[in-house]
Every structure is written in structure tokens, then in C-alpha cells.
Length: 420
Image 1 (cartoon, rainbow, N blue to C red):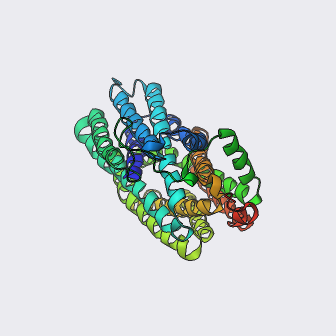
Image 2 (image 1 turned 120 degrees about the horizontal axis):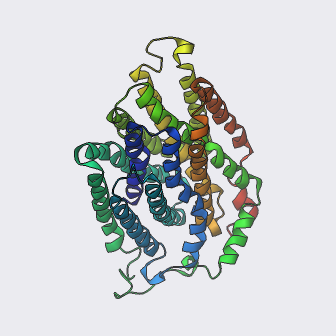
Image 3 (image 1 turned 180 degrees about the vertical axis):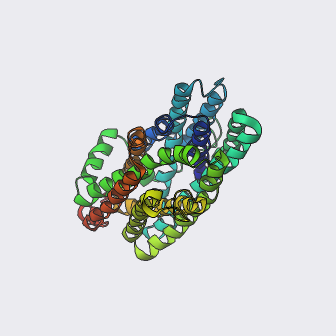
């Protein structure tokens, strides 16, 4: 449910709001900048890892106090967005509100991920990562397809109100459930810390960073980070460009796109996440990453080849809504497949003693990858779409050359588990 809560604002910003602005004539640069404001705070997730490992209220649980703080901030920031009189006239202010909201959203993500890294065994990391990431797609479905319909019926204020209501209901779960029996529900209620010595908060942030430096001193951990840093640059750059392309060049209505990307696209992403998780446990995370990466590269190459200048008119051209629908759905499936594979690999390659913090750093690389791409949207939007598709496709496929250089068990073999 917490991953659902994270997905709703993401779906709203990247699907519903992006299509709303494109419908009103905003260019790819403006839409990309707004999307980047939403993803930029996620690149600083590595800061949250040491913070939640060092500070907290142990009597309320190791992660739960941070989750409650994050949920509260998410709700209040959306309320602040609702107070903006006209977002098209105050786009910069809206961008700052989206930025603040995602500071809290990323904090919640780190707290939930850290709990998962602490609890999951290696043989279940793939499928549980798939379930977690798949739940975010459910949130994206709500934020994209559902809230797009709410926008049509009740305007932006209705969209903000519904987001607040849904997030407040989800917040009841961490508010009313304890991590462990005997802990406090709130700071002023009865209860005490139930953490084992090995689960206690760290005494020093300095020690955490020193250990993190050792964890990232190995070839496999560094190259794993480089793959994450490059994985979604193409996806981030092409997204805003295509938002404008679908509506201005192809003449799609806003709901045409949101129904595909925020509706059926989410189901494809959900299938990729959950199926990819089980496949990662069965065949290995690196193989799943390779399939997702090559598939994305082929998708972008195929998009470039679908230009009427290349294939002429027909079902396989950009003008065919069916062909573009297949492209959108395939991209969603493959992005989630690659992401779940990366999640599983990062859980295994992380050093157990700083696993929560190191895993968070890897997640920050993935988010920075998307942010870099979105920031480039205004530049690459001026390029020829055929050349852009070919260039991004080739870049995506070349990333697989790094995968054979990663030994996912190198960290534990060289550094041990860090507890002896």
C-alpha cells in the first residue's frame, strides 16, 4: 500500500499533468522541466539512508516513524498545490511544490526499501521486489488513467482532493500498525523499544559513510552503479518529446494517451514487474536486466524506423494508433522488467552491514538517470525523431556490455557480512 501511495503522485505528474500541459500548448522543455522537478529529489535518496540508520524513535520501530513523517509531508504538499490559483500561470511555483512533495515521497521510499532489505532472504528478493515495484504501477494507474478522468470531470482541484483522501487512508496503515509487538503507536502512548542489538540505530554517521566507501571500492559495486546511471536516460529524454508528438503531431486527445500509458500501460508494467521478479529468482537478475535493456533498445530503434520517411504509410508507421499503442505498452513492460532485475541485483550486491544505505544509493542512481534524460528533453526535442530513436536505441543496447563485468557475490566474498 505504501508503494501504491508513491505511485499515485508519480502517475499524476508524468501522465495526467504532462498531458494536461501538452494539451494547453506547453512544449517538451517545460514538461520535461516539471517532470525533472519530480524526479530530482529521488537522486538525493543516498542522504536519507544514513539518516534513517542513525536517527529515529526506536520505541516506535526502526522505520515506522520515518514512514509516518514522510506520509504527512506528502499529504501537506499536495494540499499546498491545491492552493495555487492557476497552475498554468504559476508553473515555476507548481514545480517547487512537486519538488517538495517528492522529497517526502523519496524519504518514504527509502524507509520502506530499507525495511525490505533487512527482512528479505536472497531466494525471495526477486519476486518480492516485483510485488513491491508492481504495487507502484497500481498507484501510477490511479494517478494516470483514473485521475485523468477526474480532471475531465472535476478539474484540477478535484484531482488534488482525491489524492489527499487516498493518501490519508493509506497513512492509517502505518499509523495503526506496529512494526513489532510491544512498541509504541505514538510517542506519548505506552510501549518500549523491541529492537534486537543487531537492529539498533547506528552510533555514528561517519562510520556509516566509511563502510559505504568500502562497499563501493569493488569493481562489481561500481559498475552496477554505472549501469543504473545510464539505464533510463533514453526513457527520460524521449518521454516529454513524445507527449508533445502524440498530441500536436498525431492529433491525439489527452485521454487517448492517458488511457494507453496510464491505463493499459500500467497493466503491462505490472505484468513486467511481477513476472520479472519471479524470473529473476529463477534465471538470475543479470539475465533479466539484459532482456529488458536489449528490448528497450530494440523498441527505440523500431520507433525511429516507424517514420513514414522510412517505412512509408501503413500500420507500422507513426500515423497508426495501433502501432504506437504497441510501442507504448512494450516500453512500459520492458522498463519494469529491467527495473525489477536491477532491484534484485542491487539487494544481492550490497554489503549487509550497510545494505539499506547502499541500496538507497543505487536507487538514487536510477532516479538520477531518469532526471538526466528529462533534463535533456528540451535539447533533444529539436532533433530529427528518426535519428533520435536510432541514437537512443543504440545507447540503450550498448549498456549490456557492462553486465558481464559484475559478480553479484563479490561484495560478500571479499568483505564478508560485516558483522564478525
